[in-house]
Length: 251
Image (cartoon, rainbow, N blue to C red; front, side, top):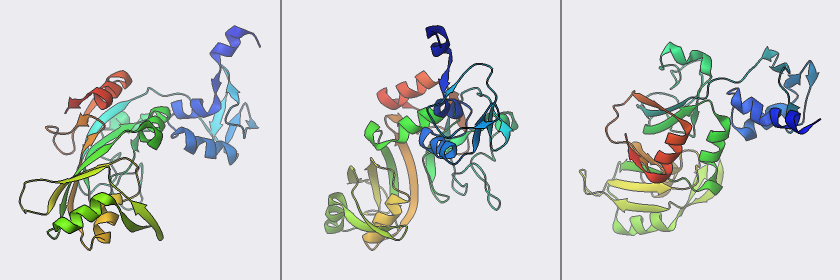
């Protein structure tokens, strides 16, 4: 294979991500499970090169790269942060039908009862980079607890607590937590997280003998949610989105 051919080929894991099939780690699992074929042959190596004109199938379905799309979305309460669900409405279900063919998915999690800033995309490589702990992209939340939190409990929270995550005890520590001067007094906090553990703030609240009444994500990195109404979104480019996250922008 000459240099020109080398430049025109794409690693299979990257190709699948470009097709909107998921982030790199997830598509590598698909490949290892034998769910991908190139020109009729099952391929189990994510580093296999895909050349122009190759026929790539995933679960028997012919796939091709889609237009990479990036939405900044204000997720309202009551929607599942998922691509599809047989019983409940998801963040993808409520998008205009013009997005149906783009195979968008949410980057990271916001549980059904939470609201706030969420990014929707079909760029698996971007999603992997944004959520990977090594990249250091923080998430900021406004949290209202059901009961007032004493100063002693606030100090305990800031030092980290041991909580139950899916049946397993884990030590969970926010990057920072501070009181917000809002009513109900002693119930409102700003919490900044680094690692994305499932339902992390709710688990920490329970470990403090409390519970979450309201949870809203207000920032991803330096991208801040302020004026965008719940249920609305803004479409942007990859370069612009990274600039917002790294340098700051308010929506």
